[in-house]
Image (cartoon, rainbow, N blue to C red; front, side, top):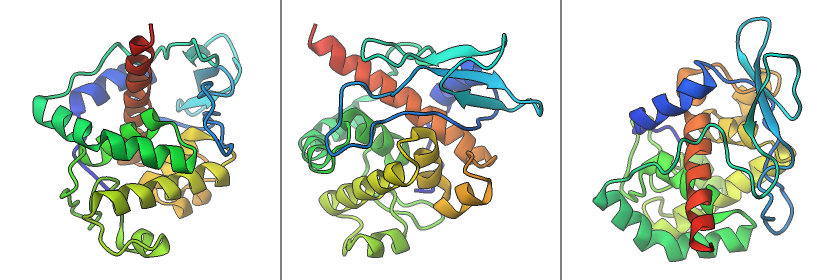
Length: 229
């Protein structure tokens, strides 16, 4: 889950809206047994704390609050600036993995667009990806996480994606469906989220990671919605 291979131009695009920092709380993905089309439980607003750090809430806090995500299934994320391009090799890897992504998402009650977004940011859909910290595979599993979920081969796409999905679903349940906190915990570890009073830790990688996944997620959701029109 430690991965430095971010698509930096897309990150910068997201941060152009988000500002250089991220806080809590982004109330989001329903954590029920089956994913519902309403990916976000409520509208999400971004405003600045007294320390100047962007804070995400489900209602406007003051005149500086701006709508970031619309809560209805018809809503479009203000932070997502249209479709994010991908190169041919990345697209081919994604398409080859799509049946597996659909199967794993259905088994664990996750939106396939969300699982796809996490795998995109974590590994660019490269099952051979290895980070300097030792994370490996599509979902960049650390050895301890792999053991926790019974993964015997982190390079195996099916095992890796399944373990990563189960771990992320557990994080969503742990943080009551708060998508930002679940993503932050996936990236930096649960202990860091707890140590920072259940707020997104102020680590550069994590502050870039959360909006990058959210932007990819919304882009994939829009692409899927366009297919049904």
